Picture 1 (cartoon, rainbow, N blue to C red):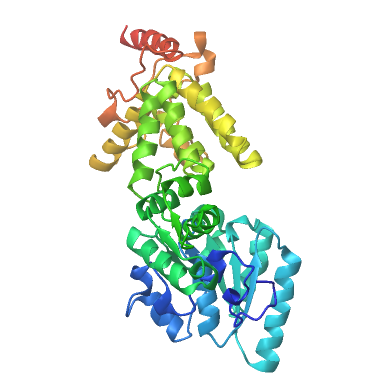
Picture 2 (picture 1 turned 135 degrees about the horizontal axis):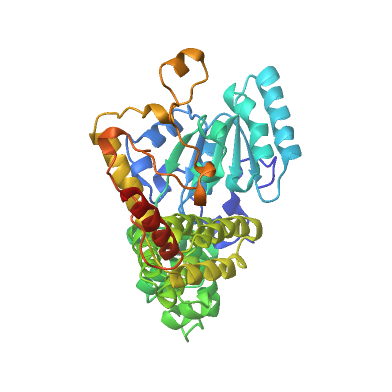
Length: 440
């Protein structure tokens, strides 16, 4: 749909459009899936049917119905409806819609809905351009994104929108969509199709209705009619249509958590081969590479720490590199860092130290800062002994001097216990030397 096409024109009337476009539903009752939002009496359905929709963001995997829902809202609403795609639109396009919205409000007394597909691809300046108009109600914004809006949509805009999470479509949902396409699409119904291996078609679709319909349309062209003109779509035709192996990976479901867990535990367990395998599974399944980079930053401190202090620097740099270059080249950066982290000496001593310290802070009474560690910016504080007898470490040999730093109630507490792994062994030896000097 172009920027100012009428949303009331049914796109399925265009015979040259892809199957997924031709069979889009035009009523809420025809829509398959997302029952938690669109079932009878559910919140989104009520808002759509009453034409009282606030600004919203649809967050869900590809092919779950985000664009279709936006089109349905256009059909049901009395508001003017405009659509932009964040990939091909800029601030100029946004301002053009806002100018039309102001005319609609001032002269026609009508509301304006702006649908932005792939809103996560808008940069900060483009998103900022929407803020005032969303806040004062000049437009009702509908954003669609496959990425976590907490990371990809600026906080001021996010706070002005309701987030609705869409789920991957179930086999039941996909079968309903498939039946509708086979019977209601004029082109497909004329081919006398039979889908002999529905389960395989569903498997390769990965819960994505668009992928399933595109695969079905291609397989229908590949199927050879028999003597009676009937075409059978079997496993062979489906595999030829997809030309790729299905990778079982649900970015928002259990498999997501299972595989990221296997990835982290493989690095922690110092197995670079397993780490690369699970990394490949995530990337082939469409995982956000920045999510993977974030997890490796955490791991670099939690599981490696001072055994190799450079690990955190490398992991942090990897996030910047992934953000700059994107996929597919980001896979090389992620493999580089994952194999390095897996091959590093390991220590969780820093993690254990802060956890034990925080437990003491939560469970024990607040301890008083020793007087010699306090600053004395006023004469009164100096007279009260603040800073008295503090010993400046740099005035002593090896820049070390024995004195108490923990409060009295915790003076003998040990939180950080470095291992003998990697660079942490040097830290351990140095601390042991200081510890022995304290005990003399």
